[in-house]
Image (cartoon, one colour):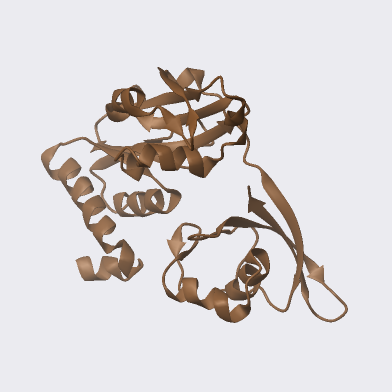
Length: 260
C-alpha cells in the first residue's frame, strides 16, 4: 500500500509522506491531535491529499493570515471542531534605531534566526518592512528568539512578541522581466532568468536543487506554464506571469516576475 502511495511523489518526499501518513493514521485510529510545524505549499498539498483518503480525520491549516504561504496544520479526529483551536503562531517584531535596518533583506532575517539553532519549520512567512521585520513564528520558540536574537547582519536589533492580529504584511515585490525563448522548457527560461548558460543551468536542476511549485524537479525539459513558481537553490525564485504569443521568428514571449 505504501509503495502505491510513493508512486505519486518524488523520492525525496518519502520521509515526509511517512510522517504525514502517521499523523493522519494516529488521528483516525487513536483520536490524537497533531499540530505540525510550518509547511510549505507542497507539503500542505501532500498532507491534504493523504488526508482526503481517510474519512476519520479533519484538518485545519493556518499561517497567521489569509494569504500566507507557509502554514501550520492541525490534524484531528473527524468529530473535532477546529475553528477555535489555538494554532500556536505569534508575530516576532524586529526593529532597530540603526538606519541600516532598511537595507536588510529576507535572507538576512532568516539567516539570523536559523543561526540561533532554530529549525526552518518553526518559521512561517517573513515580511520585510521599511522599519524592521515581522516574522510569523511557532509560539513554542518565540521566547527563545526574543532572548537570543540581538543582531541581524551586523545591525543591532530588539525584538518583541505580538499577537497575530498585530501582523504587518508587505506585498511580495517582483522584478518584471520580458523574455523571448525558443520553448517553455524549464532549462531555457531559467538560464535566461539567472543569466547562466544552458549547460550551467543543468547542474543545479539535475542535482535536485530546483523546485517547481515547491516540488523537486530534475527534468530540464519540463514545460512551464503561467502561475508556476520556480526556485533554484542559491539563485532565488521567479514566477511565470504571462505567455504572450510568439515573435515573427517563432519564439515565445514570456513575462517573468523575479522575487526581490
